Image (tube, rainbow, N blue to C red):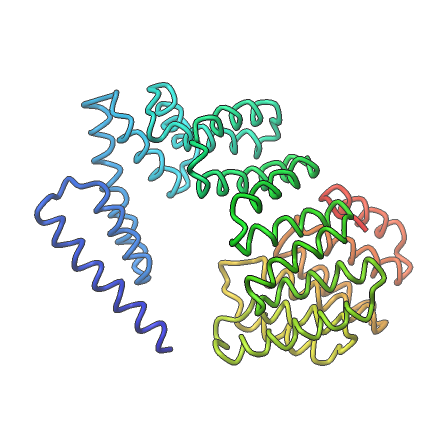
Length: 361
């Protein structure tokens, strides 16, 4: 409660400072963008939209008056992207590239490349990414690290797991003190079945942050895949222990950590406690983040299936899929529940959907 109050005060203070700046220069597009962000932080959505529209109006005038102003095109692209007008944003990023606007050229190329990745265009992504990475100085290791991290996600989206692993490996090499770099390397190594590599990477992440419950859980999964069940159980116990600490500190904003706790408890066969954790996650999960209820219902489905409550399990998996129709694990669980109920043709369809969505045993 106190954290929310302090946050509101900070946004109010920022808003007052921005308004003072806008009185001096009402044509400052960046100030209007900053005002929009502050208003979002205060929950004043309509006013925030008005502020961002004002920023866009100013940037439109700037690019009309001076079509060769690369910085204005860059700012315009970012505003358009932020309000969901992605096609127009990409046209503006393309303009930055056409103008060869050096300060933003690499970033514009990267965004264009990621758009190719989302659309499944691997060759175009690679060509654009290589152009972009060649523009980043070798001395700028922070930017190179961020770029390889983003490339890893794009390559994974394209189904190029081996190249994605190599990208995350470069991310870790460039940013060895960043816990996320090791976590991503570990995740992709697990995807490739290289569990010994993933455990080493997770250990590096845990050296940086020993209180990272999610990584303890992931390490437990990797150990279990290698049939190292004793150490896997210890890792799951650690995930539960740390989750409890986090939940006690911030119970109102702990839906994600409740899910991690629930899944770790499932691995420990402590089903009643797991259900309790997952129900708590459902109670506090923000409606704007459907991945949390999808994960919670999927976990409940796993428990109910293990307990032989197949109809209830099927209902739980269906609820999970309602929140996230592209959730491969939930479709697979649905197939298992249908098989247990003798619904074999329906199960076959669910398994096929799961595989199409990328589910792997």
